[in-house]
Length: 228
Ligand code: FES
Image (cartoon, rainbow, N blue to C red; front, side, top):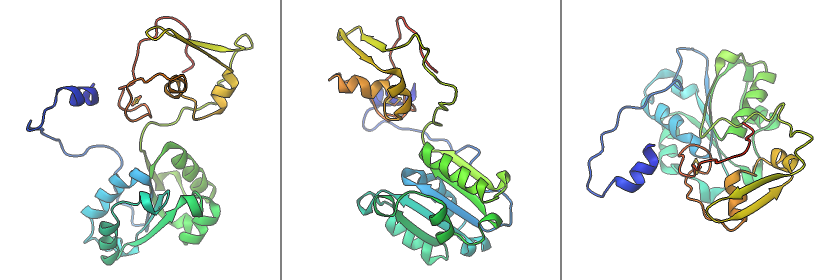
């Protein structure tokens, strides 16, 4: 409810009161060396933690792996140099050239993997891959802290179209357009959201985050069946 309201009702000059940050993605009391892994904007909560604890002893043993697509998408670089000067080990990885996180990279950048405590924040896929990598490197579950930046991805396990559903059909009532598509393709492609399918039809639904967080693209289903 908040994001659309902000967009429509808030005027320049209005006063906004903000609460302190809240949530579970916080530093634990563990004495293990900490490794922070951030993907893109997922750096923001990690950045807050790192800023807050610069004077703590663990800081000089801690490291940050920061994944961004390329040098153009890099942000906070000046601030990261500042954190590095304070003793944090910072590694920036450009995924376009160096690829996404995998076993090889983990071994290359992190020593004694199973002895460390991890904090991971980024897009859903990146979190899932990192979690399973860490688990297969025998990092205990209690030492893997994570926060989805955006919504947790849907599990497609057990999500099969019925045999009867040879084609899925969507009727857009306002624009009177109709789309049909193969359900299996829809399930297999993690890009095929209803929003994208609509846009491919030339429709221009209101949208913001494009990942299920802001609810700006919300609309009412009049009839039909939904896989959830
Ligand atoms: S929820 Fe943000 S665009 Fe759909």
